[in-house]
Image (tube, rainbow, N blue to C red; front, side, top):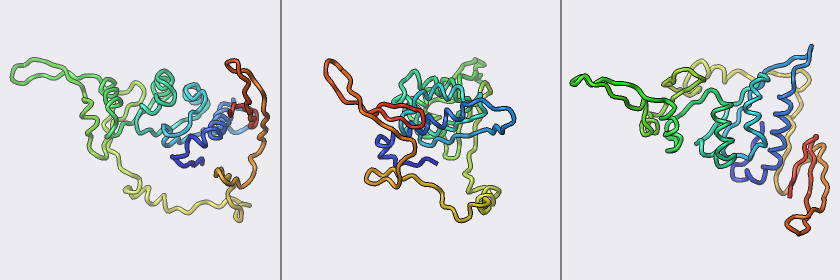
Length: 238
């Protein structure tokens, strides 16, 4: 688990970008004969409020070939545009994410996009017999959907009007949530390893982190740049 305070996302952005790149590169490794190759699911909640992940559009498009799936949670699609730009945001949403679920209360832009995606339907006036077309769902109808409803779109399948129900209101999943955690042999008395990235105190030094300061010219002026290396990934921290 990677948990960071929402209001300090920029402060932790440097370390999070390194961790994300390391995780995705590990998942991108090809299977080795004779070794297990299990699927991996990344749950990226509030991804629109976090730090920018380098080459994220490339990872989203290629990770599924490695038995990996990404579940992104966004308040609005415009959040990706603000972080990655219009081109990369479009590649992430349309090129790599095949299944989307739209819930009520979205912003105007997302509602208009969904209206265009859903397309139009042809209706017939019973009195005159004339046919006319209208949007399957208008942007306003998308925004004002009832609580607990959603629109699901997967690949080239037809859209589905979904009825959402939280797990804690389903008897089956409530029973599952009460199942005690399994005990791993040899770890009964071990506490989970925790890295505290508090700005005032770090509980222990991070492993394999090396840094050095170099001088370079920029617009005719000399400036100092600190280069950090974390398990083979170099990044500019100036």
